[in-house]
Image 1 (cartoon, helix red, strand yellow):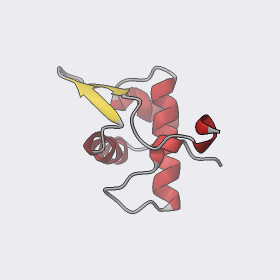
Image 2 (cartoon, rainbow, N blue to C red):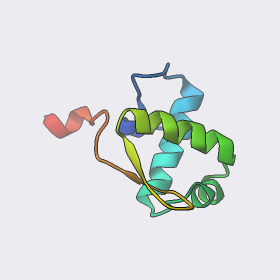
Image 3 (tube, rainbow, N blue to C red):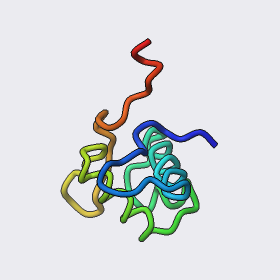
Image 4 (cartoon, one colour):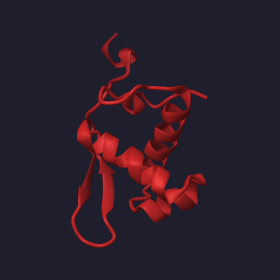
Length: 87
């Protein structure tokens, strides 16, 4: 599996399992799933796991959440960028 470039974080250790999970979450966000429940249904990842990863990504500015219940999450465009974009 290839990882999404935005799945690499500096606030935590980047292990294979976490990178795979964050990559799946990012792909679901790109597909238009904006709630944790929607992301969970699209990926098969548990709600609490998604919430933990979204909070870590939020700390680094990779995702943002809009107020209201349920929160709606979206990508910000920040985070690690693909090296190929600069060549």
